[in-house]
Length: 382
Image (cartoon, rainbow, N blue to C red; front, side, top):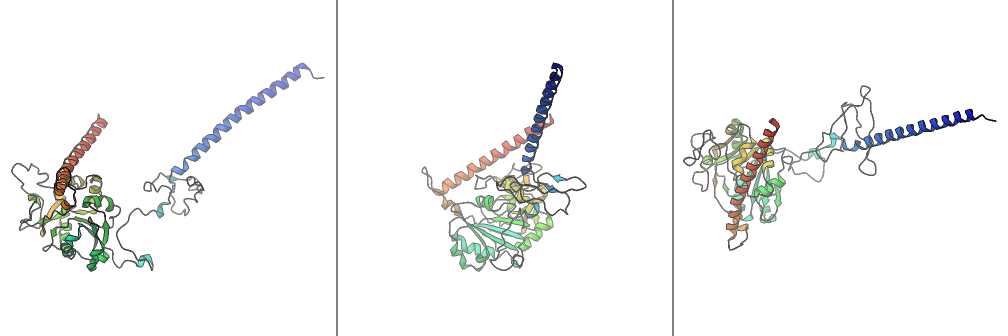
């Protein structure tokens, strides 16, 4: 027969054991939960092992398309990783497969890829065209060597007719009805698409290039280190700023006297650090900045030429007009006919009104953006 004292001690031991087990179970459960939460964060991190000798970085994805297991390796007895370095959206890819840039080089449908190109053009020129200007464009294209990729943006939806020109069969043709060259540039000349080209020409269709040679032009651009430039405009051309008119006796000029009282000291656009939007030429680095500045909904580009200097350090020295290679601006208002009569206004009147409105909107957006930036800097420094 058990004594009451012995029975009480055993009951207390049992109670203590149950309590300890209960506490341990809670602790164990919390630890496992923490581990699961931590492991669930793995898919959001692009793990890149420091050791280049590790060949397998990621193991295959699991079926749910989100989670994947990672083959663990020891590097100096610890696994080292870097934070995400892939472009946004490609965080899950092994870095060596990422191809973040492209180009307009035409490829064959047969053979081996590395045999496709006998040469890689170093420059790109784009014209926004209508078929009515085909003869002028044909003459213009002949001023550009095989070093240039030719891109035609068609605003009148007529492409097949251009096959009468042999060069057209090697050009890139992109069509969207009633669109401007800045609409096209924003959508099809992304910096990562044209990264293979040293210089990008974004030109109008109504330019006379009888006294222009593209290769000679670029020799001068490189000589003077111009990041943004344009050829001088023949002085007989209408609707041209004084800054962009051709000067005699010089290779390049970077300043000009506009109307009385327009030019400050030091001079700013349109008296310096200024080219027009009819025939600008951008270096690769300058275009990357300018592309980001182009507004998605402001398609005429008015006012953009006054802001180009923001994309070049030492703009006064790096933006200029080449005088020994010059062009004629024929001022053919082709896009005016692409407008639509509304509210008693003729098609060309509606187009011109929008040009002026966009210029005002662009100036306001830039002023507001700079004010916000300045206010942010002041807040950080206060």
